[in-house]
Amino acid sequence: MTPPPVSQFDAIVLGAGPNGLVAAITLARGGKRVLVLERGSIEDQSSLIEFAPGFRAPLTCSEAGWVPPSVLRATGIAAPPMVSPTVSVSVARDGGFFSLPCDTNAAAGVIKDSSSRDSARWPAFAERLGKLASFLGVLYELPPPDVGVASIGDLASLIGVGRKFRALGRGDMIELLRVMPMSVRDLLDDELEDATLKAAVGAGGVRELRQGPRSGGTTFNLLHYLVGAPSGSVRARGWWREHPGAFITAAETAARAAGVTIRTNAPVARISVNDDAVTGVALADGEEISARLVVSTADPTRTLLGLIDPVWLDPDFMLAVRNIKYRGSTAVVHYALDRLPDAKGLDAEALASVVSLTPQLDDIERAYDAAKYGDVSAWPHVELSVPSLRWPSLAPDGKHVVVAQARYVPRTPRAGGWTRERADAFGDVVTRVIARAFPGFAERVVHRAVLTPADLEERFGATDGAMTHGELTLDQILFMRPVPGWGRHAMPVHGLYLGGWGAHPGPGIVGGAGLLAARAALASRKQTS
Image (cartoon, rainbow, N blue to C red; front, top):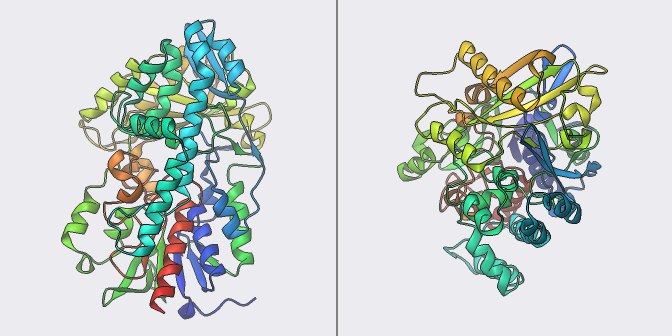
């Protein structure tokens, strides 16, 4: 089918990641002629990086995230097969490792060696976390509640959320309200006594946050990343069986089948606006493409302060956008190994899942203390996985890839900006942390690549190096994401919608924001047509 001329598109979607492709398919199925503009290639969106000849790695300790059923129903994307982990998380301890199975009965048996009390409580505790996370999943398939209630339709939506909340039952309703604002440290102190078990669970509460386990709201962060996790898992979610970018491949196929036009290597320099309404976009090479609807999956700051002329935005709104907390504080180190590291007590399934090298929550808190004052942690909190055990094609035969994530690492350290020398020195620190748990690790490294938050910002266009497009703190979720009053995807400029991770429901919910943004756009067009 011959695509329509570029001047005749109804909608333009910025970004060909999961959210962008889901938004594009939804709009196309809604009768729109859709163009997707991707600044790089489709392959870039899979986040596979060739960091040494023959060695590739996902950007992070990659998981598939959670694809809401509503995304698959609305788009017709054929969901790729997924692998569910059998090991939730492993933690370095006493010269070996403590591995926590996803099966709650098996986990209780493992825990019993350290604490009979925790062993007895574990199945109920893991089930409760899963149930609370499942309720968040229900919220994540809906537009965020509008507490302003500007219309009868908004009131019905708010009532619908309330009914789903009541369906939890009185006990779980109270429990959700109790734990969401809690620090993950307080939650675990209430429930468990073994320090290593607390560290195994609690590290999930500070994922992609510049906060320590004693910070309020970190329990919410833990629950957010448990949405879609297999039953009994308190850390790991599944991954795509075929390759890390399997969902992107499936979504691209569905998008093209829906008639979506996709252009790669087409960076956008400006979103064009006239009389408070979107009129199209201008590419970096000067080409202008007209459309009355734009869905951006770039982060809120890049979209609203980078692509829109400020004359079209209210100063108070712009101030709110400037105050979004990104605070990227995670560095990524990719290792090419000539063979698997020695890991006492860890099998291949554990190494393919999440391995945390911090056995005490207090150690994570101390690592965070440095970042509070703009310093790089001298002994960072490191988690790793071996993705070549999931996808052997990532490395030559017999060799492996290790992906390590290190916290806490400021975007701009107080001592000065990042240089390659400083990045390499930090890579040495991470290697020492790993070698303490995996003796002889350094001798097996044939190549290493360090990505600081500054590198992540430059390479992926993520403000502050925050791949989340904004921290999941309690003041930046639901109807307050990206900023209070503008949480339902439509932006102040008519025809502009946010459909990336910086909008509800946030990172790790695959296609969720794209679907909700596209639906909001289609509903608005119906009301104004």
